[in-house]
Length: 69
Image 1 (tube, rainbow, N blue to C red):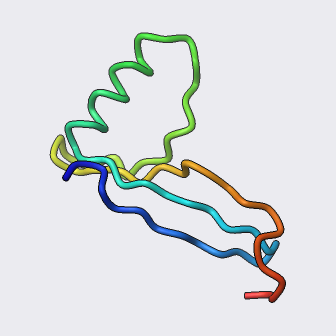
Image 2 (cartoon, rainbow, N blue to C red):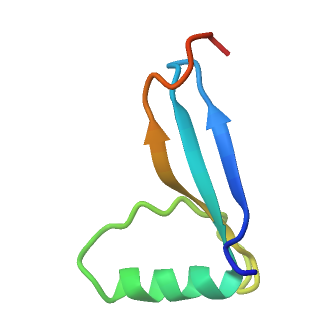
């Protein structure tokens, strides 16, 4: 299903970040919406072809683990 993949990343500041994968179509829709609004958006994307998807950070949990990575 579209946007069905999630990734969790741990960092040295002891936080966890949750990323969601968006399909190429969803990426294009988000970019069109961003271009039509005044917001600068927070999507960090690989700028590839129209079929390339993107990963977007959808949440961050500070102090979620006690060990350094």
